[in-house]
Image (cartoon, rainbow, N blue to C red; front, side, top):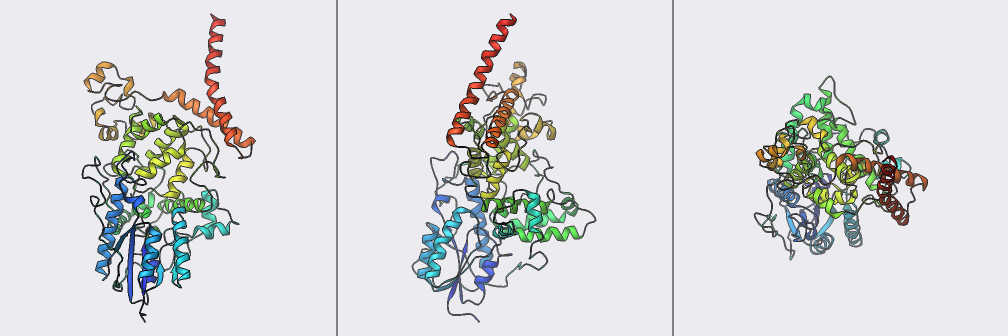
Length: 538
C-alpha cells in the first residue's frame, strides 16, 4: 500500500533501469518518487587551465558520455511515467536541501566504494538519520561486496587474483533471476523551490563546439550498453573462446574486445546481469575459456581491484600505501608532456596516445605499452602522473581499476617482473606489421614505408623526403634511446627493490632522496671509468 510520502532515488553511477535494487526499493510502496542526479561543478564545469578540453577532473569525451547516459536514463524513466530531476551544486549540500524541502521518508542510492563517494555518503546519511529518513544503499555496482571479501580474509584484502577468486566463490545471487524491467514508476512529487533542469547539453555547460578535434565513437547510455551486450553474446563462439590478454591492440575499425568497460564504469550495464548472460552462453557451449582469461574472468578482475582498493588506505598514491614499492621516480615534466601529447618520437606509443586523446579509449594491451614506456620501461616517470592523464582522458576511467593497473604496470605492486618490458618498436609490429594503426592516428607518417614506420628515425633522408615527413622537423626524434634507457630503468628498479627489501618496505622520503642521488651519480661514474679504461688501453 503506497503511503502519503515519497522516496528519493539518488543516481550517481548505476545509470540504468535493469538490475537496479536501489531504484526498485525506492519505487516500492511509495506515493511519489524523486529520481535525482546532481551535476557536480568540479566534475562538469570547464577548466581553462587543464591540458585538454574538459573540467578539472574529466576530459570532454567522458563528460559527453555521461550526458548521453543521463539523456538515455531520462527517456527510460519517462516511458515508466517518471523523469530525471537534474540539479546543480555540491552533491551532499543539494541532497540535504532536497530532503528538507520534499516529503521524503526513504533515501535510496547504490553503494559506492570510492573514497570521494564514501565521504559524500557519510554527510548525507548523517543528515538522513537525524531527520528520521530511512537509507537504503545496496551493493550492485560489483559482483561481490568488497567488505564481505575483506572480512572473510581476516580484515585484509586478498592480494592475488587466485586467492580472491577462491575466497569469493560463486556470487550469492548468481542462480536467482535479477529484476531486468520495471512495469511503471510512481509519479514525481511536488518539487517546491528546488531548481530542477533538464539534462544539459555540452554547450550549456560552457564548452564550445570546436573544443575537441574528433570525438569518441562510443555513445553513452543503458540502451547502447544493452545493444552492445546483445551483439557480443550473440557470437557464442567468440564468447566461449575469449582469451585476455590476447587480442589485437592495433584493431581500431572493429576493436578486439567488447568495449563494455565504459558502460560498466557508469553502471549503464549491470556487471551482475553481464555475468548471468555469460553463464547462459557457457551452459550452451561444449567448451569455454575460464578465469582469469575468460570474459567472466574479466569481471572478476574488476571485483578484485575494487576489493583491494577498498581495503587499502592511500591506494591511489605511492607514499603511505603499504602495498606499493617505494621507487625514486624522476620528476621530468618535459618527458611527461612528450608522452601525454604524443611527441615521444616512437610512433607506436604516440599513435596510442592520440587514440586516447581522440576516442577516450584504447585496447588493454595498448594501455600496457604506454604505461610501461612512461614508467619502468623507458622514461622512469612516476606512475601517479600517468594515472592522472588516464584518469582524465579515459571514458572508462575507474578509480580502483585505473590505480590498480598503474600499480601493476609500473611494477609497484601485484606484478614484480620488472625485466619484462614492452618494446615500443617490436610489440606493435607483431600485431600490425604494415603500421595501419599508426598511419590512421598519425597521418604525418601515412606514406612512410612499412620497413621504417615503427622506427622512422632510421629511414634515409631520401625516404623521409619522399614520405613528406622529415624526422626532427615534421615528426620528433625519439625522446630517449630505448635500448640504453630500458637497461638503465632495469638497473634503477633493481636498486629500488633491494632498498625496499632491506628496509622491509619502511622506506622514508630521505631514503628515496639518497637512492635517487646514488642512481644519478652512477652514469657519471660509469663514463669516468670508461675514459680511464680507454686511456689505459690507448
